[in-house]
Image (cartoon, rainbow, N blue to C red; front, side, top):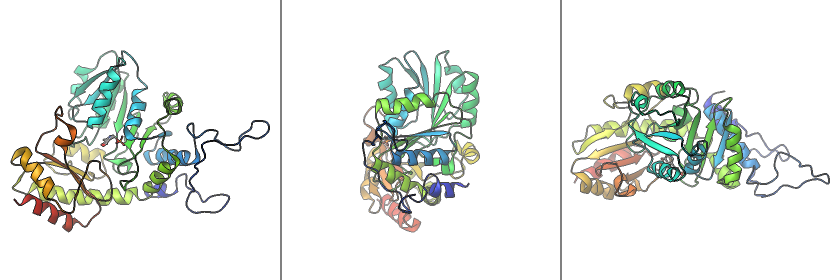
Length: 372
Ligand code: PLP
């Protein structure tokens, strides 16, 4: 089935008892046993599994074309789950341009002996020199946050598998509507469900999807309830509902972002636009090959440095000044200030999450904010 159909129907049948066309929310923390100790169904205690999480996980696996999916209480908990598959002495390679929370998490794991190196994965050939006998995992984020670097997933998988390392792709910014890491050979697809999956800026969650035959899936399932960073039934219900409109939302957000990128690229106050859909983006050819659209996120550098970037952000009227991304409303953020003093992000960089407003209204707002 096509992704539009799966988004609506995967693990979402009418309720067999009431016929309700929308799923109920099962708040129960525990499930009754019969006199002989037998359970009525697959559930015993809600941290281990519950009906709303099971439905969400089945839908996530279907959308990413994976064999098993695991839902978490946040995107960063899903990334932590992948890092829990490596141990002391193991080496992980991650991109230099990466969500700053993932960088912080990798530093946290280094306390328990997991070594991390950060590389420019815009050129996967650099991996070869960085691989060590202990390299177990290559972590890819494409497009990356916040500079929209593109990494060639197929090439990373070729280099990693020759070295016996696994590949995890943070697919948050592309979503399975635009990019299918497991089909490109990656071992794991990761998501902050807080973003496009939820889609309405009202739920925090994360997801990890494993490919068919993955040897670590059973361990990940065990760790999911042992570590306990599980989402609530209501959060699972909200994310499952968000998935129904994911393909429509992402395609429209991508079209809007393409128009915003073209507008900014022609603006004389803009020094540089980072959007893989632009022909002069260094990752354009790779993105055109591995993505079915260039996504709803973009960043740009303003002429005039940090004060000019802060002024533009202060002047918008329609865009919401907020962190996060992937919701129906457009967001703007001066990323340097959000990430703090040790960030590698340029001080004049503004990040946009493009929503579903009319494109003319978005361009008018940005045009007015840039006229000072
Ligand atoms: N991965 C990427 C690419 C992100 O942009 C984010 C958050 O912005 C995360 C992971 C973390 O997600 P969460 O905030 O749901 O933990």
